[in-house]
Length: 495
View 1 (cartoon, rainbow, N blue to C red):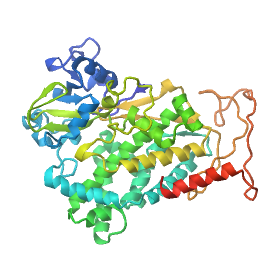
View 2: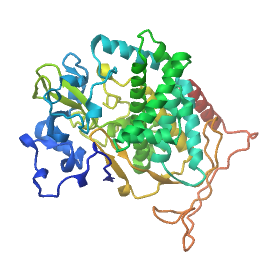
View 3: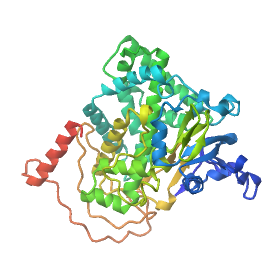
View 4: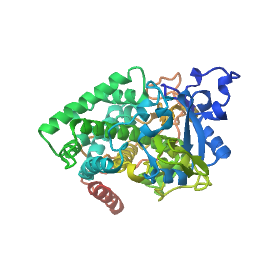
């Protein structure tokens, strides 16, 4: 798999000097940079830093701004669970106070303080967080799962008849936005333009400001409508909460919820689907019943969390973390990706983490992600429904050809091309159902397929026996009836 840089905050090997140039050497103080040539392989760099410094390591951000990156699992938990020692208010960060961080710093959108609950403290944090948590608590999860199922069916319908798809651009990047627009109360705003605007705004491209404005216009219209006429949706409950959020506070929290949920869930979906398609043992456990889809999602959250690091936390006093002396005003990166791979808790990375939810993917402490169950549901239902519809799905390229867009904050799978036998569309309002497969022909990545002409017809493999779908009026085996009933029951229970 290879990386494909995309923006100022991405690790761009082409943007750096040639090998042998002094810029390839360690930065001031002999510290490693989390950008430029040093960061072509951030995962490998984190492991080298762990070997050199232990669970907390000094690094440099863009413009050689000093920072600590927290690599240990226990140390990351200590960081996020100690609000008396660490704050998310960057206004106390020494490099910012001393003018080392310029207004046009590439990471400023992640660093700059904003009047939102994830940056607030004390009574103000309690006021804002209470409103967000209460609004989240009004979400009916059975209804949400039906939204997820309906949009999954619609997205699969858009490509199922072609026999080929890109599960990143045609599925993983669309499903979270469609569901979040339903939850917020603006289903009419979901379209290709909204998806593209969100992706563009999060990438930090030259058009990111215009894309961000497009999303904020939609959220402003929504806030105005719901302020005048509340309904039963997240936005209305946020507006009517006794905390009394202003329109600006409502819009900022809607932006926070939309972008965070979208980015995290799109990455989670893409990562989980990649694992299913590229790791034989992973898929075998799913098909054999040794692992459920929710358990597969949790394994993905351990191995490839949606956010690699989160900027940032800042020391409110002199302290110690992971054997390092942290001074008042120092900044620290909360780092789920290397933290989840801490050899002290995962000496064997190939071992299954089934039943273990102690990963760092959703943070922890007072700023723990309040919408993590929504993200899990989108991934659980979306992956399950897609695999039911396209049971013969397989990767349409060599695994080594998959490309990633890497940044300090996360790794995005650029595309996930797949191939399957063309399938008919299905009613989006009913449960997905498998379609009996015709006798299969052998196929290898890159060889001719239904929409790739060949000079000679490929030799057919021995046909697999296919169990015909029973007539609706014909009696079904008891085991199958129980399986269908159990699936329906779980669906309506929201399980």
